[in-house]
Length: 489
Image 1 (cartoon, one colour):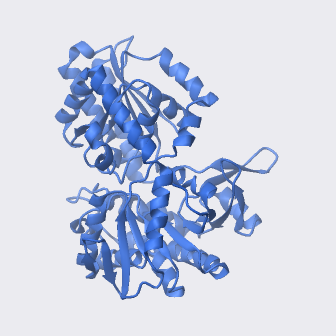
Image 2 (cartoon, helix red, strand yellow):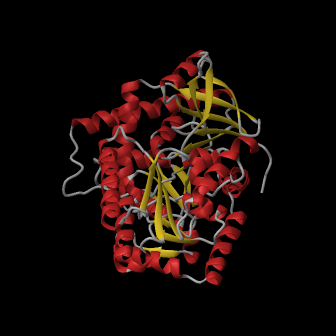
Image 3 (cartoon, rainbow, N blue to C red):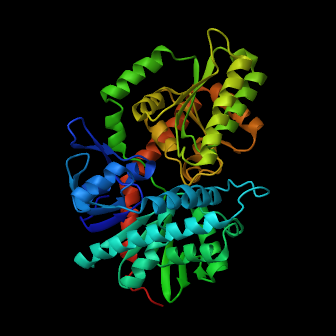
């Protein structure tokens, strides 16, 4: 799968590392968080990479200032790459991230708005839009400076934080080779009407300034083709995924991201994971239902708990022998909607445990902290993995966990996840809004015979080992090779 090494500029809001200080005042490097960073990390060992990202913390900004913004970093296996941290005005960055990107774009693209009540756009939206533009322009300036040093380097933008940057780069460097991968769902055109017309037009124009735009699934790709035609009047050739707009052609593709098989094989036997593995095994119920998520409304955690409550109500014989372990990473707690949702999660667990629990058994074990080794250990242990997201661009947990599971665990999977396009045939599918259907799927998963469980689990593992993250990365580079940089007419 590995082709020749090539030069790439990777652009994402969150970088591959973040910085802290030790007791002596020296900078300490920490692994960057998030699924995007995890998936892209192998890139630095395969290619000559310059990674441009936001200086997100005070320590990031201090390190960027000390090292003039651009410096050499070291990857997981000692490989070298260049890191460029962009320090934004703190007020602009707060509005960019906590008001516009999250929750406006995130809620819009995951269809989370309660439209009878929210959103109600006032001056704050327009101030946040101005900050979103400012941060995107700062990224574009950094990209242009890098291109000045090597104009032939391809640029690869990532996700919803940077929709406007490609057009700014295109205006400054018309011959640049630009690609953009969108990691979250792309909704239908009606969903975009939540935004004022100039904003939704600018977002589509920004993406169509790229030579390639990528999505995880055909479902999200087709939705983008439809909205590009409706919002900015682009000419769409749906058969070959080419969009013509503003004198340019953009290739729109679908390639589902995957996991780094080698990294997860290594993680499974690290001391931290093995210690958690022993602890979980010692306290394991007869039947273990697992969910691993961020505390994000799109993950549908509360409905999952209520579905488990319904399962216990309908199957009293399972009380005391089946438990749910919920390992949740607290997410975006600076945003009010996320704080409210976390409170609802905690209330729901308390309700279910009070209703069905006893002195010797609690139906739901809730752990809220960022503890990746514990999640990896739990991946090995589950009998049922519940992934019931409202919508998800892909959902890497649904790939990571079956890869490491040692009990032929059954995947219960929302039909609105991007990964459903790949793994749905080996899962028990659920509608994320249907509590009865989810309760029935949990019961069916626990009752499934050993032969059927093994066949489904082995099929998923075989698929994942054949379609790994290196294959996804190679597909992106093949798309770049299919297009020419000017791409006019």
